[in-house]
Image (tube, rainbow, N blue to C red; front, top):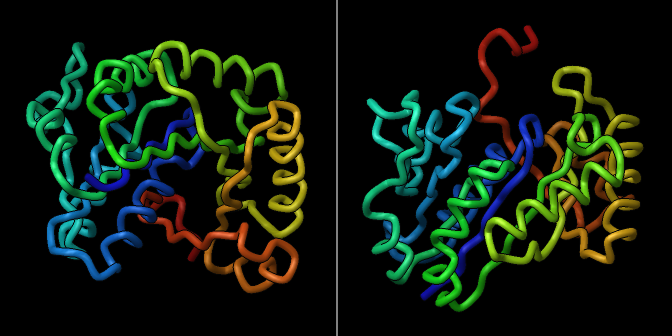
Length: 226
């Protein structure tokens, strides 16, 4: 039935950008058209969400599932009505999940169907420069909350250290070392270190296959460097 990759993380972790990149990368592989699905299930934060890149996704053969446009800012979170049926189909699905209790409850609601898949990866995306990941107690609290409410174990950590426009090599190296400490403390695998393309070549000799290049699709115009 294909693989499901779930990306969860607090606000500013970069999990939506990473989910987008994974979906777009998957669509480049020689599989049937329409087999890659990006489910935007971040029902809490309507900003910097995967659904903002709808045209980019569709142009690259990725089907986007998300809440109805007229309910994005509603008081009651709304799941795409077809989500359960699509999870049960043969496809590769990427899920962008809110890194809070509501987000994890959404995954808990879907967990029995998701676990029928051949393979599931549940990634916790950490940016150590954000309050929710600034120390090990905060990270463990986030991990425990996500796992308890979702009824699903996190399988690996993704390190995404950045300070947006102020990011440089030193920021990445120091931040990643901190995320590695978290992973070691919790005895969890650290699967990827994600960096923008402009840093990739310089960091590749140091990190090798751990390094994963990402593009930024959700950055608003006022954050661009001119």
